[in-house]
Image (cartoon, rainbow over all chains, first blue to last red; front, side):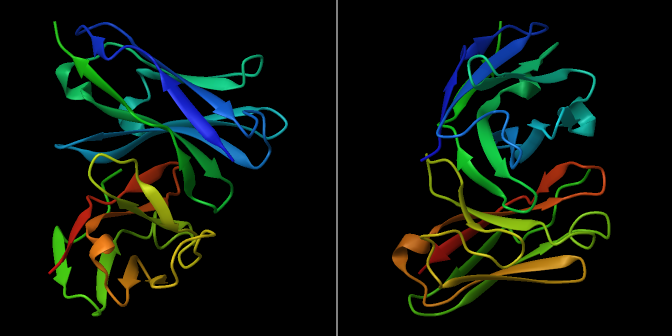
Length: 122
Length: 110
């Protein structure tokens, strides 16, 4: 059974960097049949896909076009986890953040983390 | 990438069937058979109920079915039950190698 356990601060100041980590059990971040995503949810924006990282003989990354200049998703094979880094946050980045496994190529988002509410406020 | 278009709300009585539509473009829904549907109850993470347009994950009721025609995907829930009262979201892979979600549909079981 795959489990995703999220960790990270729930409060970030404007202009600073949001950092979250997702620890994987029951699968490998280096799996050739999975991709590791971040999705956020807010009342104003609904569900919003942020980006993903996946391994197919080398690492690949895809990011939402609206966030491409601010976002980084990094896998950590030594700890079997992946992280989200979102730079220069504003109050509009306040949301419930989820890490999500995607079973490639067409399996959909089948496992979700528990969610982390991140508030951007001074 | 604009969000996929879903009706804000639908409703039905127990035992009835309802269909939720999800409209995109030729760059997302129309481009691939990579459309998924998720069910979300308040305070819970979304749950995958349909993937690859019409496939159900193990353990998901066969009362849930999916289809696609052109740039529009649909989710049909038959034999409505009280537990189906939830929010439903579609998602699609896009030609930009990104994913896009619909705005969500609130299903009310009367």
